[in-house]
Image (tube, rainbow, N blue to C red; front, side, top):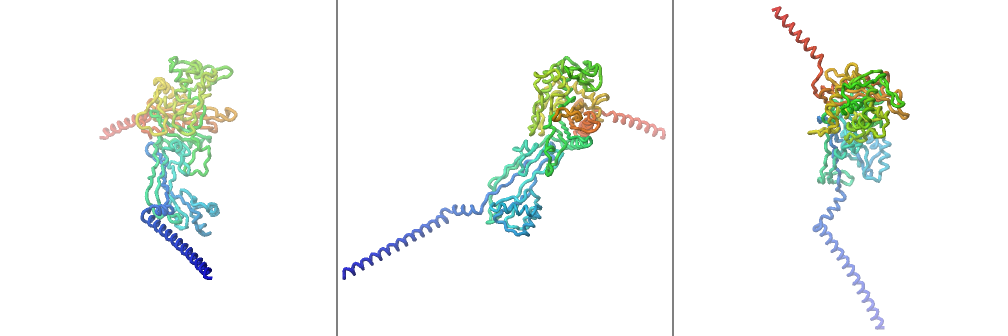
Length: 590
């Protein structure tokens, strides 16, 4: 009995030992855990403070973009053509938005959007933390939105492009999209130059995403660089007004005008019709977007006859007084007859230009050979880019002369079978006005000296200019291009428009190209009127008067001294005579 009792006591003693061991083991583990936690707490609070700070910052501190405004575009005198103005963009965090039907109605009313659209936009993006409600609105409107104090609705500063000149300079300047990225014109061509580089800052936000305060600047915003164009907005406005009035008056499809500084190659004015307002593109048509002066090509017709004459003079075989027999008013090349308006008989080179004789020009070109004429066309820039870098520029057509038939040599001499844009044609007349020197054409303001290329003998250029002056004098085809107080010169042209089935019998392009003043030219200009309607459609009737009106104003704006003042001379003589009579009368009365 005693043995069993001892065994029972031993078992109880062993069980109690195991229980105590387990107890102290658990106590030891808990104590170690407490010590570890205490150690970790001390480490985080004292030794490694940055960890908790980083975790806290990760939940409350954010990086925000600082928008940089785009560079300004100005004309040559600093007149703003494109500026970025500060505006506000309203955005929302749908996850924290709290609103009822009345709040939604108020918000839609202030934002000037439909209530259904706003509800749909918020509802579709409930899982997102950021959506735009309305971008780039006036600060006053954004202030009214924030005054509603709706949770989850905020605003941020952005920039919006504004074009002070509107449609007057739109084809040159172009425009940007809503993110201020260039889409057309200079805005596209020089996008990398104009675009700004955004900065970055750290901000403290609350749990709803509202900015509590700015902490520090990470990277400063770098605004875009400004760009000074060659345009003279005084001349640009004048050209735009006259071109628009003429296109309207003649019910034409379109029109273009280009004015170049002959010494520097700068584009002083470039206008087109139809145009568009880059500040309001809600009803924008694609046809209005084209800068037709650069993108559209056409056969230049009689406006390039001076090129053929220049090629002839350069050979030394021909002189301004050289006689060409144009009788009986037509000339057969193969099976095709080349005709003049009437039989001019035997005439010199100056009269060929003044009367615009197709027969005379063709005979000269065939005598010279196609290669000689082609070479002069090429040197003057035909069939090549002008080098402005403008998007969508057309280089026109100047085919290889080795494949020309005699009829092609003849027709090219008076502007058929070759195509140019208005800027290329203006470049040709710029060379004539600059005594054979060809500066690079530029849409940017030129600073310092200009490097030019000699492409024509100066005596040839001067002789051709004298012939161009006869075009606007009595008996010439461009008398309506005359300017009252300046001697000018130019050449009219009328060509059939080209349609899907070839030349259109009743559709024309009326052209005039010239320089002013003729003795010491300051500018070269080209006018193109596409599809004038009515009885008047010749270049001398439609385009020449535009040249006259624009040159008359442009010469005064550019402070060019008048070189033809017959009326003022007569007035001075009358004034002197009246003064003498008045003096004599006074003496007699005395």
